[in-house]
Image 1 (cartoon, rainbow, N blue to C red):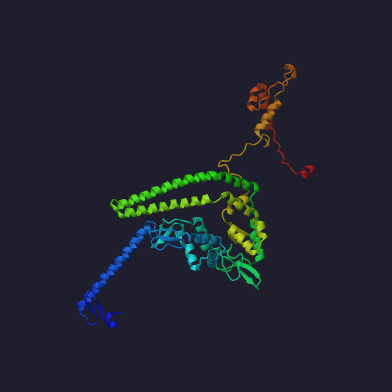
Image 2: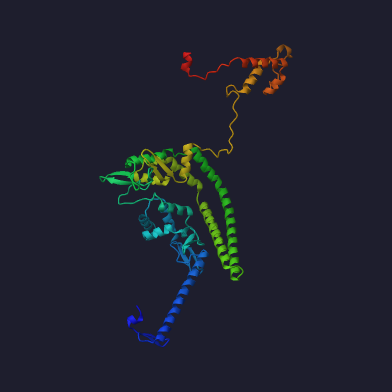
Length: 485
């Protein structure tokens, strides 16, 4: 719609002109020129704002409003942790990583615990936002950020696995305990539950890829089968006690090593920031080109973020008691089977989700995928390997002299000992029988002491031995067969 269509008059007080349908062409031309200049100014301002935001993003500073859990520091133009919001974000990731909540139930749980009202969509945005682990997306690109981190990368990955994984729990009006925990071994589809006659619960394959051979299972039957793998999840008490004692002894060493590593990371971080400041001064003085500055700043930002993540990991490792955590894990592993069959269906499902990440089910067996560190415990328990690290070059021990039948060494020693006549007591001085030196155990010493006629006699015996056909020695037989002979 144009000015002629509206049939109105516009009075420009500053220019002293009136623009209407009947205005002269020169007045309309000047008006169009002013509009073009104003549009150019607006477009140029838009470009400069985008350029400034991109420059700020390349420096690792999020150019927009800080997400929940952070706040914008307007004085320093940086982003800092919000003391009132970051505990809520931590709790969101902790609860969702357990796999026991949907987005809706998680929002309700957060409201009940913290009093913070939050919609389902906002919870989903928080769980998907990489800003909480040190990076952010701006203009379709991912940049390493300089903001402080309070969510561990491990907890973030666990939440993402639950959010995108196959074992994400499905919630309905009636809670089905084992729904979302099993996968069909025939076609890889999920195993879902359904209620028959309003009281019986059956589990079956969803059949998303067509008809499946997996039969239906009653909840009682599948619960019993799911609990069987927990029977072998046992750690010997002496092994668990030794590991816990070792962790407690090593805690002081870890503290000293952590302090040294922290100092090294702080020095490295200071060196990186010094380089960045010096390069920025060179950029302002025109000593380095713009493309070189952008490339080096991106590299330094990434390195700075890696150092900060490492320092955050050191703080988390220093705050946790590894011995106490290991003791709790061993206690849960040893008592998992008894705890499972002593609880109801929901308690059983909660226990399985804390130990298993998924279960592959076919018509006769259940193959679980263990969570860490229960996967290591299950592997060791299956192989019964509770000792230390094996030798990288194992060597078999030497066999005993009489271990192998027909062994050359014992036979040769026996022949020599039989062929050598014992010394006569009459030829020995009185009282020298007890003082006789022991016979050498080396076969070559015995051969050297034999007279020449003994060697000839031994050769003759050897030839006769080979001339006669050797009878095959029978293998050891069972007792009834010997009695029959």
